[in-house]
Image (cartoon, rainbow, N blue to C red; front, side, top):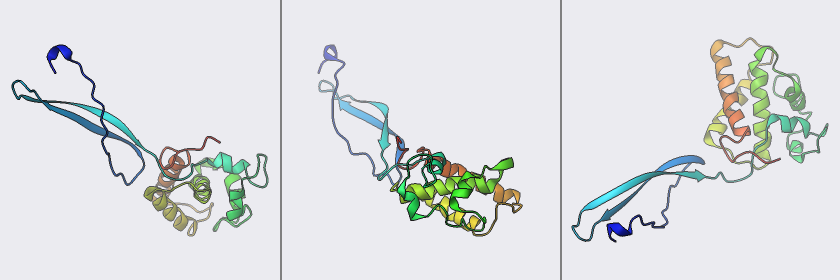
Length: 184
């Protein structure tokens, strides 16, 4: 091709990955060439955004799960039957449903974490794929709930960890990590 014929567009396919975690990844794409008159090499690069979809299901927020239990007001989501709204929630003295409806007054880390934990557990039971980060957060939270009650005074470190894991589960429930958010 001669300079007078430039620019020229070439279309091709390229395998990217594999990726262990779904999400968005920048991929540098470089095209190389050699001129056929002087044999001079050259190249040009561009970054392409690649989206790796997450397999299986989608996620919903605590607000969805609060209102789609057998108590309403929205239509019943039978995923709740796999846990049971009235099942005791660890050491809280409340049911899963009651904990979900208890506001985290004064920034109560127990309830902040519990709301995201309950939604994440229901999302997974509803078919949303998890990630290793989410699995680690759920494991930490399960240990936390087996140790503490909502009224317990938490150390600064434990409270910070609870807030951190709540934030991670919130990202999952809102579709920022994992399979993505449902379109309800």
